[in-house]
Length: 501
Ligand code: GLU
Image 1: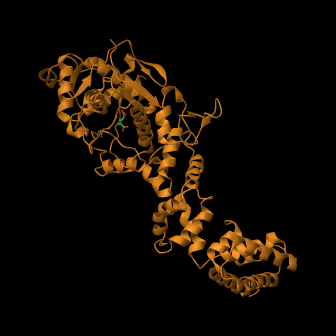
Image 2: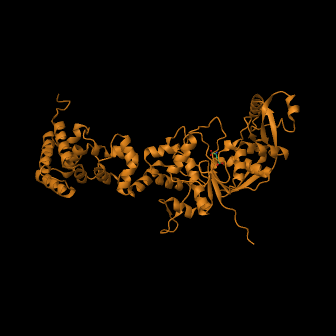
């Protein structure tokens, strides 16, 4: 008889301490993919036991931004589930009971040492060049015995009794065997004096109680894992599988930090106008790759969540930290932007345009034509107001000298503008191709270099030296706008230069 494999149950366990970290989305993505691949469940558990860093609004922000990315969970504080509650602050009696159980079986002990004493021994150890560790002063003492001695405080904390010698090992599904010397591990605090569990106790109790089969998290948690393994052993519980994902790093190899890097938090990506599907693809590329069926040995960079599910395998991860290269994200975002149908692109840039003061309703048709020209160049939705500015504003501002091509006189430039107006005035509806042909003919007739002449027209009609293809742009702007702008350019040229005044 074959024993059925236990169901795959994965989880993320964010702490609501501020804006959702980009690393939360990164770990959520892979945990969800593994669960989906095995038709298992993905759990969201809120680890809110650090009361000093707790921010009440943060939990909703985590939900909101994971949803924005298209990530969903099968069990969690908002959707419920059979192993709730899914907020650690609602599970306090459970941790206490489990902690007391460890005391009964001799695997944990109460500690009444005052802060001052702990600080004193820490300094003494430091002076002797020893790693900081609790000296087990309270081990084996009853409350009454300990109370007779100095540096006694209440309520006590609960500490894990870590074995003095030997090693604690576990197999990491990405990194292989990892071992720690027990002698170097501190007698970890499990219950704090405020009655709350520490992360270590709560995470082990909950992963066990919630039947988590795979604990997949960032590599920064590797040093905590031996403590967790010791706790599982102390409880006599079966270990889950562990996998530590490579941590995200900046291009300069520094850790992505909320203090230094605005891109450490998810709201930043939405503000900048990254598409959630592009960000998710980018996060999936961090340390993970999927094969390209058309080229053996090659990997593919543009793929969706379904393909992560399909190809998820622990041996597809690298252990070296991926570089969180925003230039690459810009490139990828551009790929996704170019893949959007135009009306979808308009819907996506609408909030950015409106926030910049450009109303969208009532001029969707014009905006669609403008966007068709910019879609190719747009890297972030947030660039749209700036990219479309010259389509949407009539008061273009640019330096007068841009209107005078190199080697031209002011009079020549004025003449070119006047002749272009004459060319356009009789045309009702500007169209790129005939317009270009007429402009080229004019340039040939007058002996102007097209590069110089077209450059002048571009500045006059867009205020810029670089813009989408010129005649297509003029066609979208339309006859009236183009004529107005050519007039304005002539007026600007007619103004005396500052030196001439
Ligand atoms: N609460 C931890 C965090 O904020 C969870 C770590 C884990 O996944 O065990 O990331």
